[in-house]
Each structure stands twice: as C-alpha cells, then as structure tokens.
Length: 487
Image (cartoon, rainbow, N blue to C red; front, side, top):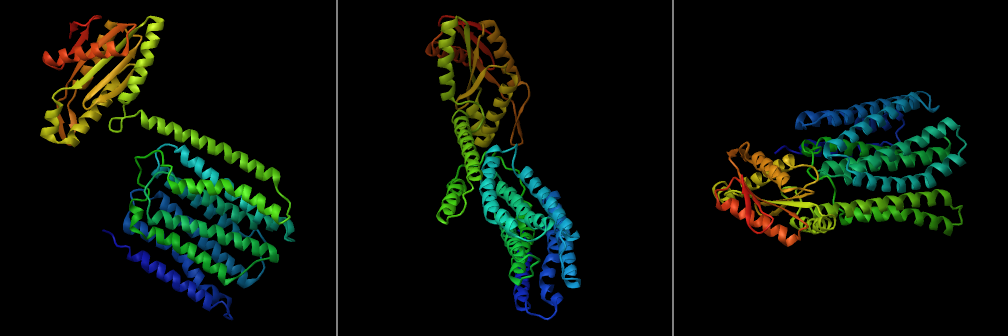
C-alpha cells in the first residue's frame, strides 16, 4: 500500500513556513518577510506533479491542469511581490491579475474533469443541490462583500472590479467543489482536502478584498499570507495523498442518496435568505427585497425539482429489480391488471410469456451463486435486446421471467416467444470466466378480454408443459385451459 509520508512531510513543511511568516512579519526586509510564503507558493505545483508521478492515478489530466494552474498562481505571486518590493504601488488590474485569472480557468477545468470522471451521466440531482448552495452563498457574498464595499470605496472602477472579481471567482470554484462533493463518487481525504483548500481560499480572498477596498489600496498582512499558505498546503497535500489513485474512479451510483448531511446542508442554504433579510431588518438596514425574494423563489423551485427527482428515483427503485434491472413482479402485476381492463374494454388480445431458465439449480450448485447471478443478468439483457417495443419484461421470481405483450394475437406471440428463446440459447453465457450453455422454456398465452388470473394460469400451464416435454422449447396455450401448440 502506498505510503502517505510525503503528504505528512509536506504539511509539516507548510506549517513551519506559516510559523516563520508570522515570526518574520516585522522583519526589516520585505523580501525576507514574504520568503516563507513564496516557498510554499512555488513548491505547491512541484508537489502536485510529484504526487502524480509517485501514485500514478489512472486519469491524470485533471491533476495536470491543477498543477498548471498552481504554476500560474506562483508566477502571479512572484510578480505581486516584485511589484510591491520595487514600487509599492498597485495599479490594478496588473499583469499578476491576468495570471491569477488564468489560474482560475485552469482549476475550473480540473474540477470539471474530476466531476465528469467520477459521476456517470449528468447527475442532475447533484447539480440542483450545488445550485441551491451556490445561490445562497452568492447572496451572502453580494450583500455583505461586493455591493457595500464597492459602493463605499474611493478606489477607481477598474480596481473595484478587480478586487471584487476574486471572491466571485473563488465562489465559482467553491460551487464546483460542492458539486464534486454532492455528486456520486468515492469519498476520502483527497476530496475533503480539495474542498477545504477552496473554501479557505474563498474566505481569505474575501477578507483581502474587504480590507483592501476599505483601506483604499493594497494590503500586506501576515495573517492573510498564512491563510493563503494553508490553502496551498491543503491542495498540495491532496495531490500527495495515495487516495488520488482512486479519486476520480467512476462510480456505479448515478443518483446520490438524500442523506441527513445532504438534507441539512440544503436546509441551511435555503434558510440563509430569510435569515439575512431578518438580520437586515433588525439592524435597521435597507432590505434587499427584490434580490432576496428572487433568490428565495429560485431556491424554492429548485427544491421542488429536487423533491420531484427524489420521488421519481424512489419510484424507479421500487419497480426495478436490483440484480437484473428488469421490472419487478409487483410492477408487472399492476400493469397486468391495467392491461386486462383495457383489453376487455377495447376487445383486443393480450399476450403473456412465462420464461424459466432450464436447470438453473444445477448452475448454482456446480458453479456458485455469483455464476448464477451472471446468468440471470445476461439472460435479462438478451430478453431486453430481442423483445419488441411496448412489451413489459419483469423478473417474476428466482430464475423465472415474465413478458407482457399488449395488442398481440396468438400467432404474433408465438413468433416473439421463439425469438426470445433463440436469443437466449444462441451463444454461451460468460459466468465469471466459465462459458455456460443456457436455454429457457417458454409458456405463452394470448387471450381476448382476459382477467389477470386466467392469463397467468394459462401461461403457467403452458410453461409447465414446455418443461415437462423436454425444455428449451415454446408452448402456446389454447384459448381454453389446454395446450394448443408446441415449437
């Protein structure tokens, strides 16, 4: 198992540099005072690349983008230090700001790659959750940071926009990080180190913007530098953790659970807007009614959409067999009752196939239950592939399947049954490295104006006859209780 020692050494080094930055804050030389900060800034991309080389994650593009972003960040820090040391004047936006903005673009690209690798499909539920949190955080940022500070500041407009851009860009990164956390995928130290780094970066950039705009110029404070160093240390620590080998591993779960923690986060996010409005009213400050009302309305609609998604997901889970992905017996029973009423009302034929895997117990006894599960999954896939549109295919129980075919004559049902039987028996089934010949017996019944009981009884009788007369065959029940045909 790979050692996490490089990450521990790195975090100890960052801590030592933080202590040095505080101790040297009153040094006569500005370059000596900021030297510990620059050591961390310049070393961070090196640590990320070292982590990539050491642990060799399967997909490295996201980590390479992250390292490239930190290179631009270190270059921007170097220009900022040089500018402050040589002139002491910041005429924003500076060339360093352009490098910082490039850093944000690269990190956004890295996080988006992580999201796409970790989560199959678009994962709409996680996107909605992240958007709820984003609106809430954006509301706080606008009301308490951007709007009041830019309005009261005497800085030129270009400086205001530049200073205000950093909290906004950090908020964008944090939103993506929340989306990363709320999506499906592996959890662990790497994920939480990345999230902590971006959260801390948002906080310190917001504090820097507030201080700089309030004081009307640039700010050089050891406390802010130490927080930036910790943020950089956390992102470097994430890359130096062995968990990066599995960090962007694709998950089999497309829809994240509505866990208590997730629901608590969403509840806090939704309640922030009315709480902010109440605080403004208590303090006698102007209440941003249009902004807060709009945010509340959007979050309410998002929560409704999330609830609808949860209900739909639960419905799908209730009617889907966990092993095969087919419909459940309960769902088939409900649809069968509905189709029987419809067939009686309109007068059309309704067909039902009962399909049983031949000698399935022998497969379980000889090759084990995992092999049996593999056979059931492959038979299900072949049934789905060969069935016609409009049919309902369900796992009826154990190794038995049912296919409901509305608007079907006896002749059409017999053709469908033979196609499903042939598709199942056509090729051996790979059951954990062992190729097994698998066949099925099919009982078919097509009745006019049936009841669920009569249709099920007829198909069951036909299935029994198919198994009793040699298996791997189709038997079609007559309109009465007897057997009409065999193929």
